[in-house]
Image (cartoon, rainbow over all chains, first blue to last red; front, side, top):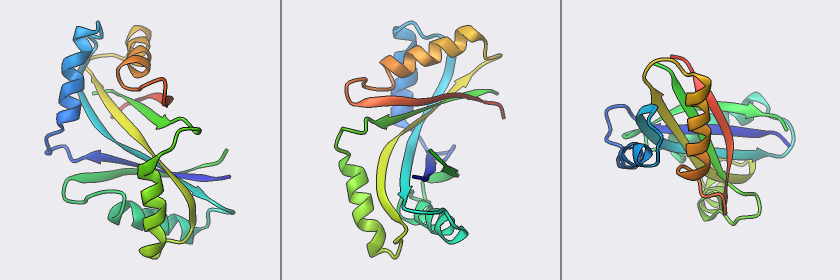
Length: 83
Length: 83
């Protein structure tokens, strides 16, 4: 069954307190290789049947309206994944 | 600056109330192409300098220990992205 993966990240200029918390915790756990962390969201939309252009267009619109808040978030990726 | 993207999803057998809420809202907004939705997390880890095998190994360990809860979540992807 094909899936459409939608990735949403906080805009670069928006403070990301979860990312900040993680970047503070990493060195305390011995992970010293990372200078910054941002946390976003990943959605997997299941599609029954074929992923047509119309379905992909629906996914893009849903990503911009329901799955993300365009004031503070960017949709960085809308991608079909075949299993 | 290279980044390492880590994707974490709820395990298939775990109830995902956010995904359920989204799949209920989609048809009300006119999006009728999707039969299921799962919501997970996407992390972007910034790396200063080169992504060596040791850095990637740190990212994999951090993904399994700090960025995900292995009881209820799977790390589905750890991937280097060059900008």
